[in-house]
Length: 101
Image (tube, rainbow, N blue to C red; front, side):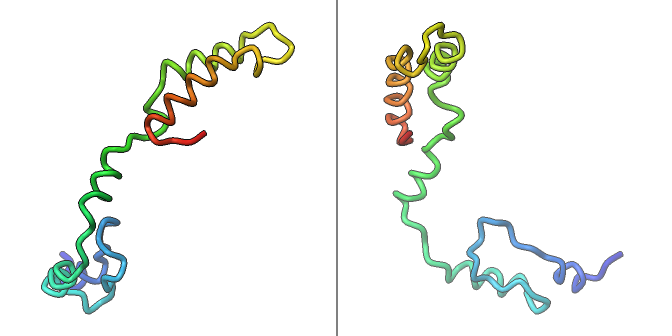
C-alpha cells in the first residue's frame, strides 16, 4: 500500500481550483485549504453567466435543421439566396442566446 506522502506527491488539483496553488511534493491538505481560502472570490454575475449560457450545439436545433435541409435540398443555383429566410431565423435565434454568427 502506498504511503500518504506518496499519494500527496501524485496529487493533482481539479481544474476548478485557482492556478496559483502549488502542486509539488510539499503540498499538504492544510496548505491547500489555506490557499483556497485566500483565493479571490469570483463575481456572482460572471459565475451565473457562465452557468446559464448553454452550448451552441444545444440551442436552436429546429432552426438549424430547417436551415440545413434548405441548403442541402435546394434546387436553386445559389442556395444562399434561396434559403436566406431560414438562415436569418437561425442567426436571430442564436443571437437570442448570445452567440454571434
